[in-house]
Length: 78
Image 1 (cartoon, helix red, strand yellow):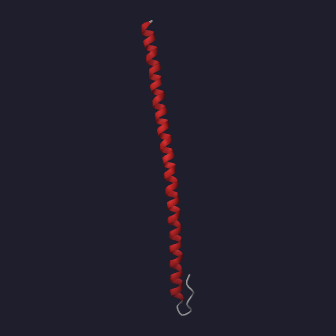
Image 2 (cartoon, rainbow, N blue to C red):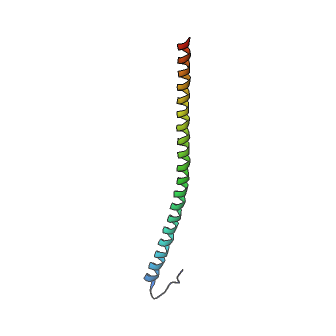
Image 3 (tube, rainbow, N blue to C red):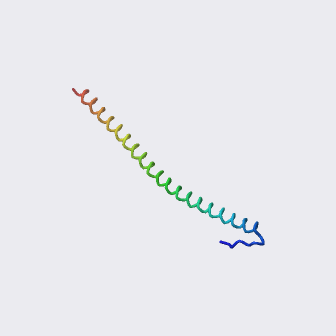
């Protein structure tokens, strides 16, 4: 932090304002990086959940088709 210069108060105000801006932007950048990592992890979890639901639905439909086919075969042989 700079000490205020009594001969040049506007220059000191400009420098202090720039320092505050840099600190604010640095804080926003860190926050954005944390949010990106958090939502990236959330996206991976949702992708895994979607894949599992898709596989379960496909397996359920396959099992239903197998049972239906076996019933039709049993009816045809009797």
